[in-house]
Length: 256
Image (cartoon, rainbow, N blue to C red; front, side):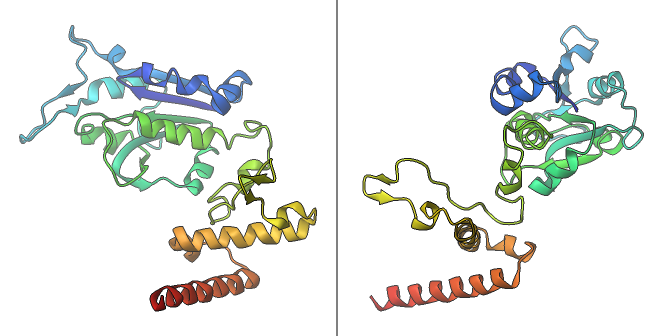
């Protein structure tokens, strides 16, 4: 897989790409990640990548010239005309999700455009961008942090990138639910003990405990996910039980 990142701060990516799963994937030849300096595609002595917006207003807007030239250099002429997927990080974009990461990893070539200031000239979006992505309802100073979120989420899904191939299958959101808790040694730490089912050696009991905890945590923290999760009859029974228990707990607290 090949990932190209267009940015005015290519040095931002030096450290994140040099550690952990991403570094190992690069060294193993599973992915090639290249940050490109948009200033290298300018033609004036000031290496200008932004200008004032037409119509007035605060801030600056990234000009189209360097971005068009950079994408043409990468073999991308217009949105949808090549096998490359051009992504623009934007607050107006579709919310990024695990499902989207799974879709993106199917592409051989991703190009990620990092905006700055008030964003980019709309003609870039209209004619070059295939997908606008938002990583959350908040404002960042630029697209670079968001780009690393997307890169990290996608790279770990490349076959061979993780030491344990089944790890990604059990991550939060991979099955529509949040992940269950994890414990390791020692069994008893300052009086806080590992839940007994995890010590039983009974794989069925362990999986049942993990599933119940996953449902409990999702119900408490992200109940919106339950609307689209694939749930069995047993899952629905457990959720009803958890809701009933939560209702009783609330009543007890009110009475106290």
